[in-house]
Every structure is written in C-alpha cells, then in structure tokens.
Amino acid sequence: MNPYYKDYSAYLAERFPGVKVQKISVNAGLGCPNRDGTIGTGGCIYCDNSSFTPAYCMAGDDVAIQLEKGKDFFSHKYPEMKYLAYFQSFTGTYSQGVEELRVLYDKAIAIPDVVGLIIGTRPDTLPDEVIDLLSEINDRLPVIVEIGVETSDNDTLRLINRNHTWSDVVSAVRRLSGRGIDVGVHLIAGLPGENMERTLQSVRDVCRLPISTIKIHQLQVIRGTLLHKAISQGKINIEPYTLEQYLKLCIMIIEEVPRHIAIERFLASAPPQMVVAPQWGIKNYEFVNKLRSILARKNL
Ligand code: SF4
Image 1 (spheres, helix red, strand yellow):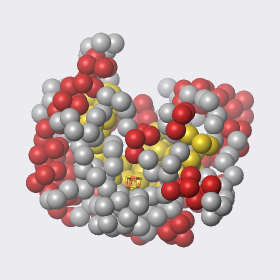
Image 2: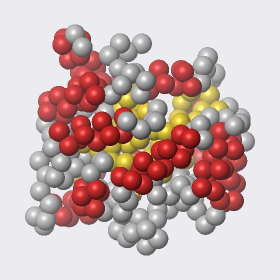
Image 3: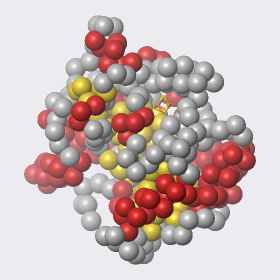
Image 4: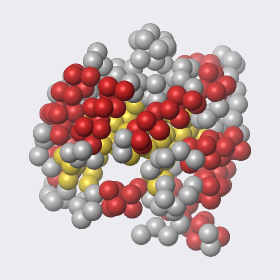
C-alpha cells in the first residue's frame, strides 16, 4: 500500500475486489476525428500514436485476436489473472455509428477472463447515444472512460491543435459520471507556453470534476511529429523539464490531488529511439521509487 497518494493499484483493488487485473491494449482501428478532417486535420501536434501502442497490439488483427495474444503474453506468469480490454489507440468511441462500437465492445467482453473495459477517447467524441451504450455495458461489467484533457487552458488547447475546449471536457465528464461511469483524465505537463503553475491549475480544475483517476506525464517531443517540426523551425520554443524539476512538480501535483482520486502514472515512456526530448533514461518504476523516497524524506 502506497501511503503517500492513492495509486492505480488501490483504485483497481477497489473497483475489482479480490481479483488481480491487467490491462490489455487493443487497437480497434477506429481512427481519429482530429486527423481525418471530421473535427480537425493533422492531429494534436505531439501525437504519434505508435509511440504508445504496444507491439502485441497490431492494427488489422481482430480485437478478439489481440486480446487472446495479450492474454498469452501475461498469463504465463499469472494464470489466475483477469483482464481489462483497453481501447487505447487513437479515439476509442469514434465510429461510423454506435452499432459498430457495440460489435467491437461485445467482442472484447466475450473473451473469457475479460472483466471490464477501459476506453480512451476525446471529450468531444461522446455523443449521447455512445454514452447510452457505455451505460448499458456498465450495468453488466465495469466500464472506465479515459478522456484526453491535456490542459484546462483553451489557448494551449488551440496551440496544440486539440480542437476541443475545456467546456467539452466538463460536459463529457459530467454526462459520463451522471450515468455511473468511472472517468479518468489525462493531462500533459510542460506543454508549450505552460509553466508549473499552469499545470497545477489544470490539476485543480480536473479535481473539481467527478473523476476517479488522473494520468499525467511529461511532454515528450517525438521524432517526426508536428511539434518536433515546429521546434526545429523555431516556431515553438519549449524548455523540457529536467528530471529533478519534474519530480518537484509531481510532488506539488500529489499535494493538490484529493485522496479519493487515484494517480495512475506520472511518466510517459515512448521507445527511447523515438524521443527527441527529454531524455531521462528512467523507467516508470524507477521514477516512482525516486518520487516515493522524496515523499518519505519530506514526511509528506
Ligand atoms: S492524441 Fe488522440 S486526439 Fe490527438 S491526434 Fe492523437 S489520436 Fe487523435
């Protein structure tokens, strides 16, 4: 048990009592409305979806096949493990119609030992009929919706080409939570034009909403993204945090987050060959250990 903040394993233990659960990422090939012109083109300036898609999760494979492959990957070590199908890649609620989503989610639920769904999406891609479907599934087994928020500042959202606003976030979180669906939010620290105080403001803003989890990570400049190009051309200037600065920020974030909200992670870890900056060369568990030893030293 982590005594310093509510971590994700504590949240999962509450949500799935008595069982050990593991996420399996699936790439349902749903695409992204911020790339195909439906909402915007070009995508968010930092985005290279392949940087956070695990190797076992190949687009083109059926969702059921991906889940079976993921189970093979994990079940050798823990045969008693149960699984959460994680629609992580691109926008997990974006489709030609709600029936397409129903078929995909049903395929995932039908896999033995899948005990819940986690669906990553944008706040503006959750029409009422999709929320109705998620609520219907949530009556049978837990559904958690992870919303990409990134920041609560509309100017930054414009700059990074998110093509949604903070009020879209507020509306999506309230409509999901009002139907009893757990909501997680995703934030990025160190976005262009944002200092530590602005990131902390985003943390405070999301914590005022009815959310269950927060995932936050440092901005990573991924090779070949629009962000990388804009920096190379001198159109955007960022000063990536040093590891020490980012640790300090994470301590301040922990102090802001109420204890009923779990902090899922603090570190993005795209494959090192894809990352231009920052290059800290640290693994997630090493980062968490450093963070905990600082918290212990400070007696927080
Ligand atoms: S971060 Fe998400 S919304 Fe933005 S371009 Fe990538 S997949 Fe689309």
